[in-house]
Image 1 (cartoon, rainbow, N blue to C red):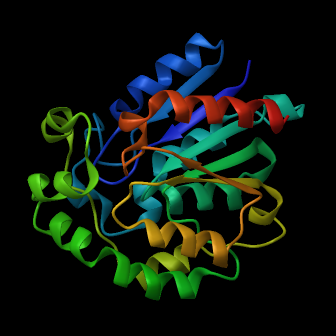
Image 2 (image 1 turned 180 degrees about the vertical axis):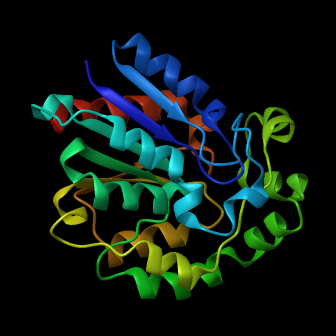
Length: 242
């Protein structure tokens, strides 16, 4: 039995993994899906985050700190992050590399020791529309038209406003090193029907992971559009990185 830790993207919560959770558990594995600060059923409000990626990621960092030191490789967690959770994953990898067997980035911002400053400039160009929608308390119908092809009504019902932080400040908060972050295996999941798909390939080219895979027929919300294919790949990672 392996332990998967699932981290949602902007505006979402642990609820968005419900299809994947069921498949991973059915395969006999342990799954923890977290709500980041002011997300999902977390009682805090977006104003409580104070524009800090560290405060936003606190539930993940606290959870990782609570895990016992891994006595063997199969006791390490498989860390999975979607979209904006990329920054949170990177911080966890830098702080707790000995507790993570592999980190899987799902259409997520995959920072690196040599990529941070470049990432800031490229991310600004990539996310102008998205950031504006979030700042305006989310025009969910607009966001949904960009990111959803499945489970639209579920998303409209459950999403919450997401904090926005200064990109350069976030880069300073996520300083990564080869000695720690660099020791954790990384996998990148490309969503082939993602509207901003070129950005995923830019990340892979500029910060090559140990492996990457393309999930056919997947939009940005791959856990809704192709949950079985995603789960199958995560199970392959569990078998490989042990």
